[in-house]
Image (tube, rainbow, N blue to C red):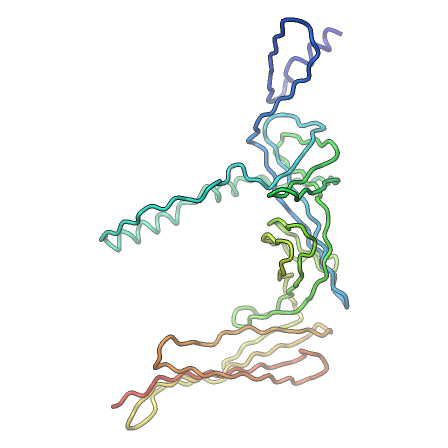
Length: 335
């Protein structure tokens, strides 16, 4: 009996952090003691799985979760865990503005200083490089409290977290949304199109910024990052490339030179064709994005036009050629 009582008072033989409290009372009494203190070596970050189901009625399910990490050296056994988005280390007031001095300096010296500052990594980059790879263990049962100025997730059961530096994953519930799917393409930069999903956050809850794993019809297609989505906001997210929608962008004609005899002006004419080949076996609404020149000078006039040629009308976009023509002219200069 005495040995068992002594073992509870002595720290374990392995590496361990222990908080010891000494209490002195003049006489025997019964009392409840609660100790609150800040643990700096503990953190959490949101993660989520975004699962898109295609078909006639597309749906998007966002399975929210959190990665927990504690390296305090303590053993957290059967603890009551609350997660909050309140940042205790964030600023509580706006920054001050100071006068901006102007001075004459050597431009070459300024360039050297800028290059030197870019070479040195920031503290955030250094922390990311030392971050341990996650080891995920599933848990569930959290509920969210959005009644205050920040989101708070409370768990109704005790949770155990070791201090080995491994991550533990917990689930924070799922949200379902109706989705719209279409293809977007930027032929000048990409040889394929991308699946874009639009939905409205009608859940009444804020979707936290998080690392996201993207799934299409049950298949993992990419890892991404999702910014915060406030309630009521309409959001567009990319869900990977569509390999069967292939793009080619061809410059058919380009001409530049002077014209005129008495007067002279410079003219630059260019004709570009964009081909979209649909090899997916299904219909797609495709949005093609390209650039046309613009002018900020009064004597530079730009005119452009575009038209669509669909060679096989079996599908909405089956083998289409989008031809754009733009012409820039400079105002005449008398010779």
